[in-house]
Length: 456
Image (tube, rainbow, N blue to C red; front, side):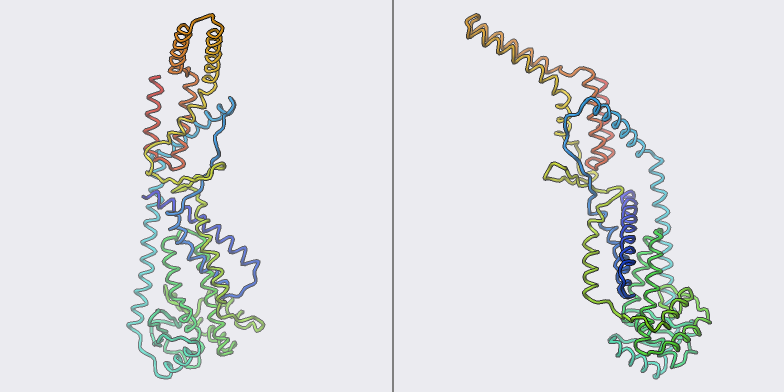
C-alpha cells in the first residue's frame, strides 16, 4: 500500500509538470485577460488531485509485438538480457530499496500533518478575529449593501471593526465577513469594500482554501508553489479591476493601498488581505495604466471549452506513468488488449511458456519427422511392389512409431534445455515487470525453475 501511494505521487507529479509546461507555453502564445489566465491556472491546479486519483485507476501502457523465430545471435542477446533482468529484479527486492521507499513515505507522512496543522491554525485565527470583532456602524453597512447590489451579490455580507488587524481582510462563504481597522475612513472603505466584495462574488475564499488543501498533500512540488503565487497575484489584480470599473478612482485607490501598506500588516493564512507587499508595486503600476483593457469575468464559452479539453485529456495523461501501478498490454499485431494488476494473476501464462518450448524444439522435431516420413514412404512403396507383406509392413511401421515416440520423450539435449530454461526465466521476469504476477510469485516460480534445472 505504501509503495502504491509513493508511486502514484511520483507519477502524478511528473504528469502534472508536463501539463503545467504545456499550459505555460500556451499562455505565452495566446493574448488573454487576467480572468482567462486565472481560469486556466485554477483548472490546472484542480487537475493535480484528479491525476493522483486517476493513477490508481487508469493503467499504464505497455506495447508488445508478436514473437517470431529468432536467429542464433538473437538467442544470445535474449540470454544476456535475461540475466540483466533477473539481476535487476533481485536488486529491486533488496531491503535497501524498501527502506528508501519507506523513508520517503515517512517524510511525506510528516509533512502532510504539518501543512494541515498550518491550515487549521489559519482557520482558528480567523475564528478568533470574527469573535473579537465589533459590527461596524450603519453607514458602513449601508455602503457595503449598496455596492453588493451593484455587483449582484445576493449573500449577506457583514462589515466589522477589528483592533487586531492593520489591513482589511475578507473570509467566509455562506456568511462572508469583511474586517477593517477602526482607522479606515468611509471614503477609503468604499474603495476597499469593492475589492473585498469582488473576492466574495468570485468565491476566492473557497478557491484559496482548496489551494491550501492541495498544497498540504503536494507541498513537495515546486511548481505548486509557483502556481499558487501566480493565482494569488492574478486574483488581486482582477479585484483591483473591479474597483476601477465601479469607482474610476485610480489615483485614490493607489494612494489607499500605499497608506495601508505603511502599516506592515502581518499575513493571516486563508484570509484574503487587501495589501500584499510583494505584489504592491506591480498592482499600483497596473492600476495607474489607463490604456489597459478591464475584463472582470471570463467568457462562459471559453471557460467551458477550457474545462472540457483539460479534464478529458487527464485520463490520457494519467497513462504516461514512469512506474505503472497497473498495465494494459497492447500488441502491435493483435486486436485485443489484456489488463493486469499485482496480485490478480497467480499463474504465468501457459501458452507463452509452451510457445517458447515449441520454438526451441521445432527444428529438431521437423528434421526427425521428415526422416521418419521418408522411412514410412519406403515401407509403403515396398508393400505395393510386393517385396514385403502387409503384415511385415505393419510390424515395421509400428516399430518406427515406437522409436519416434521414444525420441520425442528425450528430444531436447542439454544445450537446448538450457536455452529453454533461460527463456522461461525471461518470461517470468517480464511477467513480473508487466504486473501480470507479483514479485513474490515470480520468486517462487524462478526457484521452482532452478530446482527443475538442477534435476535435469
